[in-house]
Amino acid sequence: AQSVTQPDIHITVSEGASLELRCNYSYGATPYLFWYVQSPGQGLQLLLKYFSGDTLVQGIKGFEAEFKRSQSSFNLRKPSVHWSDAAEYFCAVGALDSWGKLQFGAGTQVVVTP
Amino acid sequence: DAGITQSPRYKITETGRQVTLMCHQTWSHSYMFWYRQDLGHGLRLIYYSAAADITDKGEVSDGYVVSRSKTENFPLTLESATRSQTSVYFCASMGAANTGELFFGEGSRLTVL
Image (cartoon, rainbow over the protein chains, first blue to last red):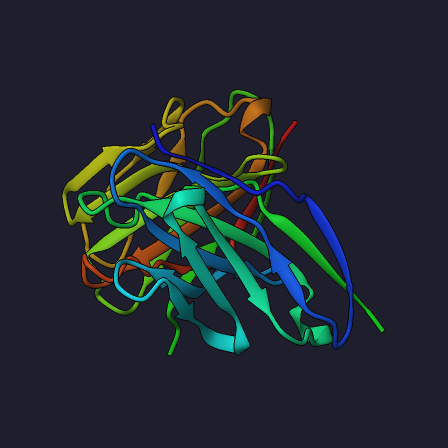
């Protein structure tokens, strides 16, 4: 069965500092990996996705993520955080034959301090 | 550009009552989904639909019923609400099957007393 683990429930980062959110997955075949962001009181929005090819993927809002098969990881990064990046971030995994039926991690809450 | 809308946004009900959460999308997306969000669990899939009149169960479907008579609507019904169904419910849609990108509504917060 596929699963997703986000080890950090809560992260506090200073504005302008770098951010890295961890995501580990368990899946038998090639996973399709996603990062979604949820602003307070809102639904989720796709930041980026990895299907195949280049293991470093670029997303919206200046985010990027790197797929590392050997470590079963898909960590999200941003070089310089803005106050508007305060939100909850979800990693998700899907399969080729089950589009949209994603397995989500429990989420990481990001707080940005001045 | 309405996108995907959910109603009601907030609902309080009592144990044993029937509740229906509505979801409407204006993109004519084929795929639609219902997820519930609970602290510590992230989002869990309740039901999904690949097209009108085609639905299937997700991970946590017990106690829920869906229908999809029209492409744009995907209502979720709790036939006899229980306290464990207190949650935030998200409807989502997806266009082409191979994009993997879900578009989410703003959520419906349900409290069962």
